[in-house]
Image 1 (tube, rainbow, N blue to C red):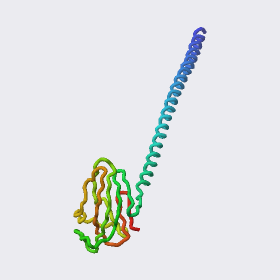
Image 2: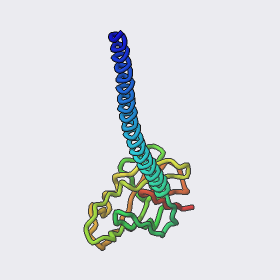
Image 3: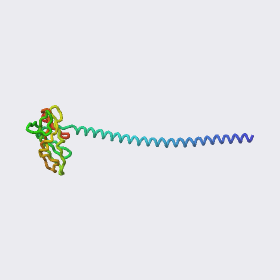
Image 4: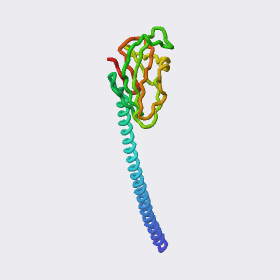
Length: 192
């Protein structure tokens, strides 16, 4: 009988020990789960901060792009009005006229000469490079006229000294008539 009591006592002790070990294991599991949840919450917060920063970056880029698109819109000037550029140039187109007295060097069939006169001023203190082929002439049908090499028989500078200006006379071969318009960068001058 003592053996039966001893067996029951040992079995009871083992069962209670397993229960205690189970409780300790449950506490350990619960503790590690709480730590994992806390770690995941922290990572989620960091990701949300990154998403917010990214959204602000994209929003800023979109705003800048819209502003750039607005500033890229051509500005129309009257003949004789000046346009200033960030590069330091101040351009004034003073005349656009068809002139049959000009002899085009590379004349194509159906073209007639159009002369564009402009003043280019360097508003900076350093010299700036200058290229007359940046000007474009459009005829009354909004077709691009051809820049003619006879322009170089005029006194065309390749560089303009700081604070100085030059008057340039350019020749174009146009297939259609007026009204003409001249563009330089984002600026356009029109005879309308």
